[in-house]
Amino acid sequence: MIRPQVSDFIALGKLPSERGEPDEALEEAVDRAGELLDRIERPVTDEEAHLLAECFGEDLCFGLAWNLLHLIETAPSARVNQPEAAKRWREGLTNL
Image 1 (cartoon, rainbow, N blue to C red):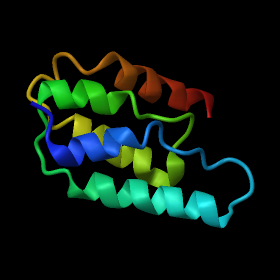
Image 2: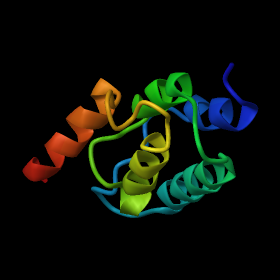
Image 3: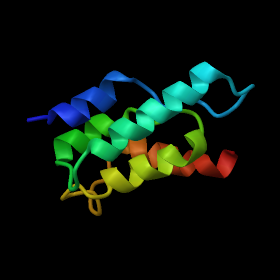
Image 4: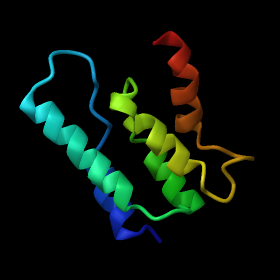
């Protein structure tokens, strides 16, 4: 079962990119994502972790991606079987 707070965050899609010119729309998108991420109580389930891992964007999203990763790491099997999308994101950091 996916909790409503998790569903609300997932509905936003991928985290916005911090690249490009900052504008009001980007600021609002980042603020909204941060607010929804903060509403998710820890720990998340393994199912929620896999869905949340699909929300990584192309960069750090002003630090929100780290918060998302740490949230995913609270899932029961995260240490043994971290979602593939989370692994790809973490490995991609070396290219930033």
